[in-house]
Length: 200
Image 1: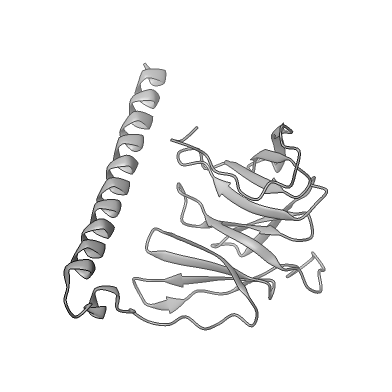
Image 2: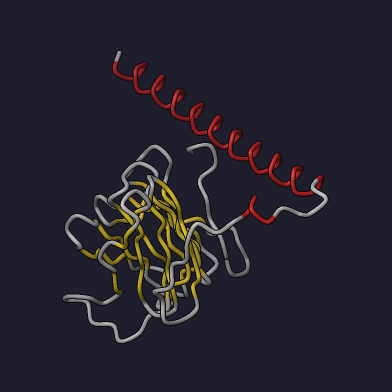
């Protein structure tokens, strides 16, 4: 049935993501062990592949996926770097186009796990913003009453995202409609981070 097929696909995706994370962690452990065992502390184990100097203020977030690196800054911009062609894509600026914002520090950035063409950011002006890179279109999500500190996309549902804010709340969003699907109000102080666990 379609429901069983969807459930099976989700289980396979979760298993693949877990396996990828295990390989990444094992590789990191081996590199650290090799460095600790080395008598000359071989710096080549952690050599830089290049430098990415494009922001004009504090770099406040980074997200990696689909051969892309996405960074954000207090300079109100999000930068997307394509690792395959080793070049920067068009920068994204808060307030470009019809949304007029003079300066809006960005506190966190996320690349959608399902769609490499969707980038989201959390902003100090109480809003989250979503860009679709192919259209360079900016979607503003408002509703928080404090700075939005973090943003995270669901691992298997491309339209689901969450945000954490100084207003002591976490919102779960349906970005296909631009609506809040749920508000979590259990915290009694600022919420600094939010993340979906195991695709839930």
